[in-house]
Image 1 (tube, rainbow, N blue to C red):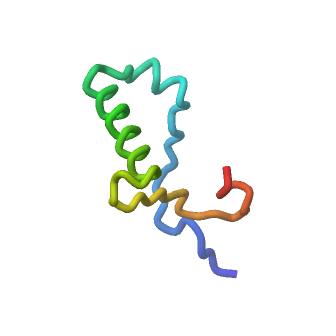
Image 2 (image 1 turned 90 degrees about the vertical axis):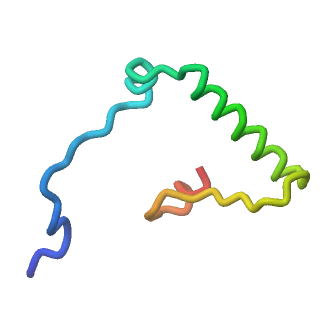
Length: 70
């Protein structure tokens, strides 16, 4: 059978864990302001005060329904 998966994968580089990212890339005041502002905007959308549409997307491929709900 001819191979059909990973035909163009040159290498695999593991992603760092969230803990490693928190240590290596700490959140500064600008990043904190972005997070706080985004959360405020989302609260407004969910409460109906902000008429924009909120789209929560990802992961790109779901194989188990439980994973999508998580």
